[in-house]
Length: 300
Ligand SMILES: NC(=O)c1ccc[n+]([C@@H]2O[C@H](COP(=O)([O-])OP(=O)(O)OC[C@H]3O[C@@H](n4cnc5c(N)ncnc54)[C@H](OP(=O)(O)O)[C@@H]3O)[C@@H](O)[C@H]2O)c1
Image 1 (cartoon, rainbow, N blue to C red):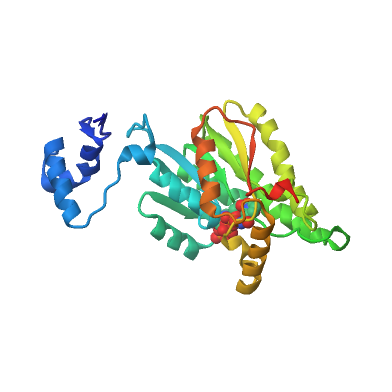
Image 2 (image 1 turned 90 degrees about the horizontal axis):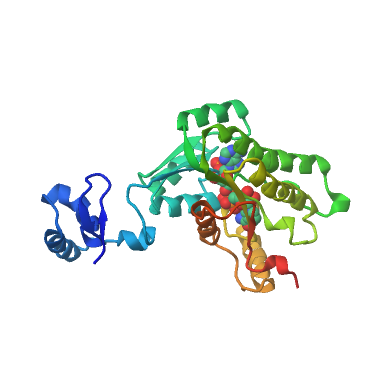
């Protein structure tokens, strides 16, 4: 059985002992024999346990806690990343504009995740928010925009400009203002979109917004080194981003995409979150744009 050090006490405990340490505060001092007794009793009571090695991976050290800020973490992809990272030994703070949505997200995410309601388009409020949060190790930027879609011949350039104001500039502004607080050994992960490279009819505007961000990624990785800079470029993902469609239209759209792409299904936010986690944790990846699109960008 492997033994690891428990962060707060320095005590050497097995995974079982670690899992039961919380219980020890109620039941008295913990060692492996005592832990197994407590575990058996707890299982009888219907309490579940996780082996921290399964959750955090080999070589995990309970003392290492990364601070992650997720701009746009109250729904969809950012929310899924917050959920995953908070289970993987990260202290997570999420940002979103809507206070009620933030409150609900924090309630669902549990006590380890903090949050602040702020519109990252507002530079002054964002600066104030960042100074409140202080130093961070990793930044994930998932704020979205939906304007700028449509056939080029009819494309309303005013709406396309708004699309840039909703996504391109807020993502860059968040990255730029957060630099002062970012650990030099940390990372920035942009959530862009497969419209940049999928060559789908009607997406030239969206492609320009997301392609603009993706083109900057390797350049920023060189300029901002040793901070690592990457992007995840999702395809069609089942999130509230699609709520502009009626439920029936959304279902039909998802069905059409699922039939057209190689993996035969729409993506889930968790499909993207696992790659966000990898880009944060793998210190040997920088300047990359990773497509998570079920093969959408491969075309017909
Ligand atoms: N879903 C897809 O199919 C898909 C495909 C490709 C790319 N993407 C990209 O993935 C990213 C995440 O989108 P999603 O699908 O997860 O959508 P989502 O569920 O709508 O999530 C967007 C998140 O960003 C927050 N947000 C938006 N604008 C903000 C602002 N100005 N300031 C602060 N927070 C802001 C939203 O909260 P509030 O509304 O409360 O502010 C929410 O937490 C976006 O960049 C999107 O373009 C999505």
